[in-house]
Length: 614
View 1 (cartoon, helix red, strand yellow):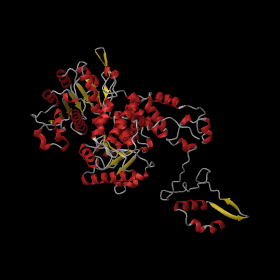
View 2: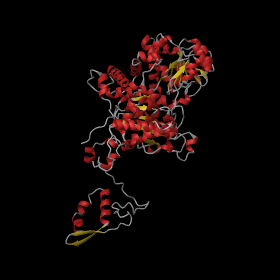
View 3: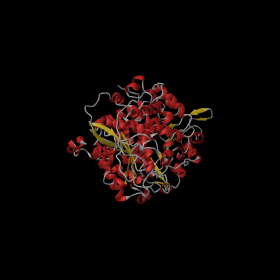
View 4: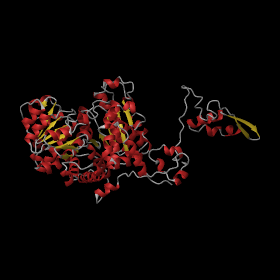
């Protein structure tokens, strides 16, 4: 007690949480001044024989306690830190140095053996969602092994962590949710979004993928459960583009949902209210955009993902002049499809300007692709983009978009309203327009019917058919249908993966027009150049870079995209072209410009190999 009295003035200056701890300790100690000896009152009634130092066992629900913790990279805390945990790969020396002896079985596995064991385990799962959950569990306990697995087995695991499985994961996210993998910003946080951003432990963020969950793939409004999309996209930023995982931030903005099934689901994890719209929605998004820039700076890339049409175009137009923003549904899809079209010219002949394009779907993806095609034709022919748009026709739910419908069209559809008599259905549009290229971005499955494909085949020696809608169930047609109905003459690519198809003794390998070809490398290019804005010229550069990576061997198989096994090399080339365009446009801030941008991009890529610990 003499010590306590002597230091009472110093104690008064301690932080409140320290005072509380001292009070708990002092309350459990009985001081007896017997020659300076101190005896401890042994009250073990609440802890199974272990003293309740922090007063947690004796606390009630109304009794506030402090959640004490510590962070030392050793022992159990090291094993529970996904960034540094190596599991059985800790060496004998590391086990001694970091107090791991006895906390792990005695065997030491290298990373390659761990990878082999995990791939064996993953292949035992028959349900794709179970594979997805196993991969998410791995990401949460051993980050480097997760990315090693994904990089080395990208063609096998891409459909697991991304489309099509991620769609099912989002539908069931409330049931499979275990721990937060990103930030949730809801209407409850209005007025304090900057504070919420500061709660995220990483401070050097370079890429944010954000969704409001209103249009998840072709599955519609999944509200807060759309978080699976930003998480999946950012895992690909790291695995395919080499962006460091600690600099990636997934965010879901929860403004409610209009999905009645979710609103009535007791396991739904989001706000239980109808979607906010108008001024309330705009103010929340504006606060979010300002807070991101304030907290992370001018060069943080904000990727909009799966926003509904009515918001996606407005947000991109509103913030493209003040922020580094990119909409993957509008711009990423456009860039990857344009790359496939440029590559396909070696198979179908002619220039881009020689072809006629017909779209089923006039939403974000359809109009975004159409505009980029028009820009590329304009670049090649020097014709005004208003003129090159006339090579491109779009069909929406009401039929062919023509000038007589101009007054009733949404703003983003108006550039595609050409002079033509009204046409109702897709089949009639194919017969009237006689396209050489048919592109599906409708989100509606089975819409490229046998009659439609057969008509395309009757009009073209090699009809180019792109069924882009995701997931697989929403694809406009399957690879098998495209090859069979065209009698093996179609050049086919899809948004979701399809297995190779054998037709009349010949094996056809369908291409996948997957955004994952573009956005990881595109984002890396923006980062390494320190770009402050995104411009259409950068998207064209990315498309041309991807098309250039298709080899003669790929063409021989009918492919218009390179295999994903080379994706890191592909991403480096895309990043280099995007960065070069940023420097050319005066939008790069990382100076001086590196001499070899491809090598520089490769040198900046995150490597998932284990590090040795002191």
